Structures are given as C-alpha cells and as structure tokens.
Length: 340
Image (cartoon, rainbow, N blue to C red; front, side, top):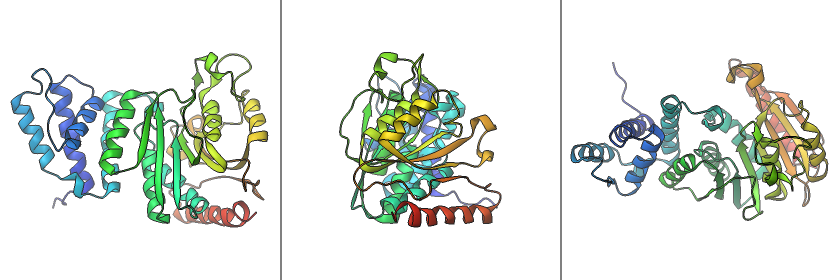
C-alpha cells in the first residue's frame, strides 16, 4: 500500500518538477530554475515569460503545478522543510561546493535548542547571519525560537553569492519571515550593531582580499587570513554588549597557527562560553568534524560562565546518552551561564 504524501513531500514535488521544467526550457541551472519558480509562485502563480520562453505549453504545465498546491495554507515550517529538500536536490544537480551546502536540520535544531534559555526573556529578538546562504539555518532557528518563547523575531542575512541570496529571499517571503537580506561581502562594513544574536554556519578557508582586513584583530600576520576568523569577529562586533554569537566552526579551530590572533582578540572582546563538538558520524572524516562555538560579547551584564562548556555530543545512535548530554547543557546554562 502506498502511503499518502505529506504536505512537505507535496510542496517538494511541486518545487522540484517546476524547477526542472524551467531548468530545461530556460537553459538554467537547477538553482536558478528554483528561484524563477519561487518568483512565479509569489506572483500569484503567474508564469513570467521572457523572449517567448517558456512556451505556451510549458506555461500551462507550470500553472497547473502551481495551482495544485496552495502554499499559503501551509505552516511556515512545512514550507521551510519543502524548500530544504529542494536545495538538497540542487546540491546533487548543480554539484554545489561544500561551503554552499545546506546546514542539516539536526544541527540547526541543536543550535536553536541551545539558544532557547539564553534569549527566553526577550520580547523582541534581532538575529544576524553573515553567511545566510539559502537561509535554512537562520530560518530554522527563527521558527524554533518563535515557537518556544513566543516573541517577535526579525533578522538580517548577508551573503556574497547573489543566487543563494535570491533563494533565501524567495524562501523568507514564502514563509512570511521578517528578514532583511543584503548582497555584499560580509567582511566589509555594513549597518546596525544592535543584534541580540549572531548565528552562522561559517565557510572554511582563506579570505583572499588582504586589503579589506586591515581593521581586524583576527587577521593573519603573514599571508591570507582565515575567513571564518574574520567573520566571527565581524559578527560579534555587530551584536549588543552582552549579546551572543553561535557559530558552526571546525573542531580544530584552536589548533592552527592563526589561532593565536583569534584567542588574543577573544581575551579583550568576548567571553568564550562553550565549544561542543558535534557527533563524528555527521561528517565524512575526523578532519571535517565541526563544533558549535558559543561566544558572548563583553559589556552589559555579560560575565564569564562559572565553567566553560567543553565537550562532544554522543552519537545519535545512542539516544539515551544524547538526551543525557542535552540535559547537562541545560543544567550548565541555568546554573553556570545565566546564574552569574
């Protein structure tokens, strides 16, 4: 017996089939086909025609696909998950590089869960993601926090890749999220510094434009600087005194020659409150393993936690141990981090 499709699967089916049709008829990448199909859907299911393409027959097919499911009747989280499945398909179709891939939901959930108690007293939250990409991490955390603490949430997302930013714009609009998206190099100066929380899945590698890093304390003394070091500093400079930053970083963050400048900056600007390695099974090898880095900007009511939370999540294959570790994190937040 074939089980009926869930709403997530139904939405994915519409997005996937229409993206592939536009990819073929408009000679686009799969990602660009998705962006165009998203714009069509947001424009009341009206198919945009340029220079006679798509043709009348394809317009009819696309219109029928769009009208087969009214996304406006779906919960925002269902829309996010449907778009996420489409982006996972795009990774295979367009052979997208690792730094541009979607942050897995399980990691987004953990990062969101860690933040719930930290921000639960806020009436309005401003979030910042300097490497927003397709928006999956930011939007997943926004939904999680909104459901848990029921406050107003707005966000700023920045990315240098215009295609990924176009995807996040379509996604945010379909989900009805209050997100300001900016197309620029996140290392360069940008707007307000009043964010409550910065959260990012940081790209790993060197930043090639050395002239842009002169004001950074985390820049390399010789050669190119690590982009993820610069972005951590930039993000924390754009949160309020006492505000937090939560970043997905290499588990070897402090094991490189450039770690000295990062640690020196931390000594004066932020408190290192925690670093938790994610389960090794999530990554192809030990070298690719990542960790969640938790920082707090100095100033305001910020203090160094009584104990820095250092550890590694147990395997998801051991649910009892995993739940115990989560409980230890909650206890640490309540007794060591927030009860100074």
